[in-house]
Amino acid sequence: MQTNIFVDKKERTGKPHELFGIWMATQIGILGLIYGAIIVSYELSFIQSILAAFVGALSFILVGYLSLSGKIGGTTMFNLSRAVFGVHGNYIPTLCGWINLVGWMCVNVVTATLTLLTLLGILGINTNTFTTIIALIILAILIAISGFLSQESLVKLQSFFTYVFGLMTLIVLGFLLLKTNWDLLFALPSGNWISGFLPAVSIIIAGTGISWAIAAADYSVYQDPKNSDFAIILSTTLAGFIPLFILMSMGILMTSTVPDFLSVPNPIDVIGSQLPTWMTIPYLITALVGLVAPSVISLRSARVNLSTLNIKVNNFTAISIHVIIMLALGIYVLFISDSFLSIFQSFLGLIGIALAGWSAVFLTDFVLFRKKFGYPEKLLTGENNFNLYNYTGIFSWFLGVFLGFLFTNCVFFDGPFANGIFYNNSLGMLITFISSGIFYIILSKIFNSEDI
Image (cartoon, rainbow, N blue to C red; front, side):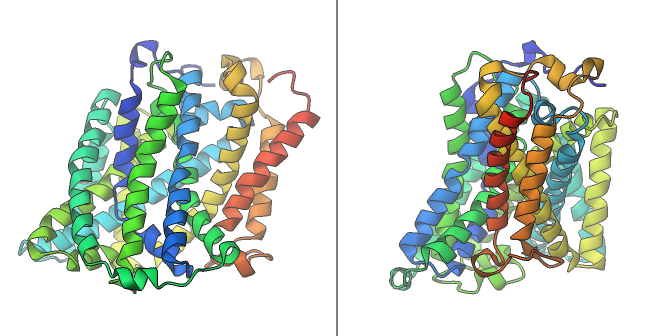
């Protein structure tokens, strides 16, 4: 059983502003624009759409609040999760977290490869099978190199991405703003708050706050334990909220000039077509970095999760495993089956429901117990076979996930109640999140809690 799971106190010297750089870099990509277009697709008015973007982006406060667990517990997210699910009971949630991180990292790498090929084409370089493979390998290696960086170097890299390419993103958005058809936007009729606004917000929350919560403590664990809780929460929350809200708002505005933005095969090319010719290359470089930056964070957390699963390999081997997965999935999507990507994303959506339940149970446990009593080492290490299974957490998680699946549909799964306002959105994930938390509150009162 693992016992050396805690970060050395000498490494825990970070400041809250470092979390701002780390997390903002993960949110400056094209996904925010796409989320904005998704919001409008629910037939909302301009004001409703902006409000949905605001509420959705604010969900990053979940990442901010759960970052406190890393400061308090002194170890990474899914190691802390052992207190809630038990050392052995934690394996399946951890595996789900690893699949989610690796899966979306691979999706980003494929999209980044296509972006790099577009950039090469503009530079006059012929793109073919060979250049596609080389582009994929280069991106995979660049992301892999980040896995060898120290925490201090990672902070500097992500901060560089944040401030340099964040500024470039604002310049790009400025050009898009000039083309906005304001008359069309303000003429949009108001939509239904229940069947339109709520599902739109649910998709944003699912893809941002809930999705990134699984890595919250992986970076706050390096914070000085003396740092202010409020400063950590504020720095992390604003790091996600600011870029998300700005990008989603611009995505909403873009629908006035590119109504079919969501249906085009390559949104990155469409955005580029709205810019002056001289801005195309800087824009594509910015888009490329916007895809690489979150992959850097995903790799770091995925590698940590392997260790939590008791897969004991050195750092080089762990990174090599993830590079092989990136290359294999990338080659399959780019050369064998491009339709696989949409199916794979649907699968990751189902994994996301499981992680929504995990986030809720972890959050509820933190509020009820851990924030006050902390994370005793015996709960996390399994010493003397103590806390191998925490059935309160396991049952709460399972019941919430089961309930969420009933209201969920995707390309290969249809829940019996996934119709009406629950059809084709992430409300099932929100149901999982809310119900798992409620189940944990109830079951923690029923089960003996003397070992908590």
